[in-house]
Image 1: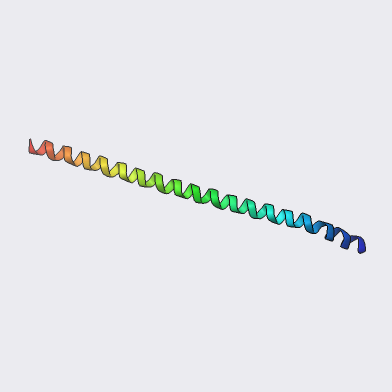
Image 2: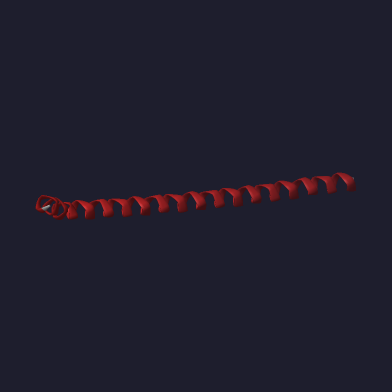
Length: 68
């Protein structure tokens, strides 16, 4: 029993290190997820702008052809 208590005492610092590592990993994963979401939003916004510009150009071409 005393031996187990000694092991748990010496393991407290290891446990703290494990907790710190887990927290750092979680923070990194969350940060990466946020970056991925931001990149996806930017790509979707850029695609929407491209689609809008192309559709406007296409509409203008159609209008010009009809006028001629």
